[in-house]
Image 1 (cartoon, rainbow, N blue to C red):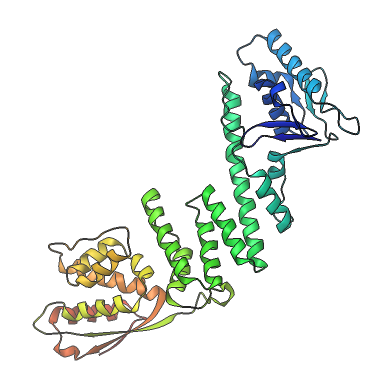
Image 2 (image 1 turned 60 degrees about the horizontal axis):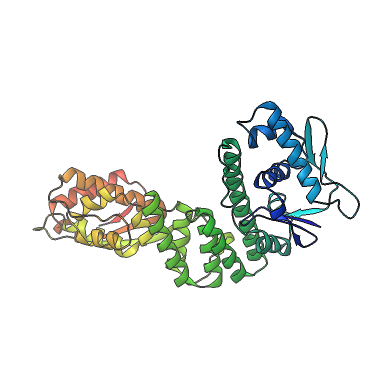
Length: 384
């Protein structure tokens, strides 16, 4: 049988014998063009434009004929007598009846949905061996070189799809450790892929390995911020919060997205200290909500609130890639608005109740802010 290896180190074998050295680089390049256009007729003029773009018409036609002849000369008919190449005056194609195998085609033709775990695993083990025509560059054949790059990109996407499909099949069948190993391979193809990260967190959660899941998220978050200057999406942050706040495995069907958790906040103020009541409520928020939720708050809000409460800056800086400093001065109106914005973010996740001790004894500024908040935040329950 003919074996065509186009990934990594290029190798052509027939019945186990390596015949690569018998073929020139452009003969192998012609074979590549026929393989990637399998089941299609490729015009000889188009082949000439790919491989002999600077030759005149007569020379390029001769080069195409000669290299087709070299392929037929060095690659015998298969066991059923079929020739590798079907050719006429103007075009040529691989013979669809010829018995051969090709690592590139095994990946391209793979049906991720219908293939079994075993089939997908064999493709990963045998065919994931490098880039398309790795290290290849043919001088002055610009279109051909661009075609190689295009197929490398397409191959990487398909390889990623195969790995994700294999991981999901392992997960569905309860092979969690196998699923995790496949995801690690997938991450090498696309280190910043949030879909892969989401599957990885779910798998760690299903394994009950909170520590590894939390560490994985923190590393992914840092990498995403360093390379793309963005935070993980909401789904990933919710998964992380689930891992961070419970020892139970994450089970998607058990999550009720519309269910609001209750949190009770507490505050008291000192009449002689400005912002003391508001600062106390911010302390309570820092203790009650997760670091994931706090990291969703805009750093400018954190900075402005940090003018009256150092704790929120300290907690934010511990778990964020953006470091916030305490400002030297902030207008009171901006502090009030920042406090309102913070509560708004908390209310998206929680049903909030604030119990205030001795409200009448609090500082005047805090009392004015709380009265403002009670009018603006209708869902917020304040017990004075």
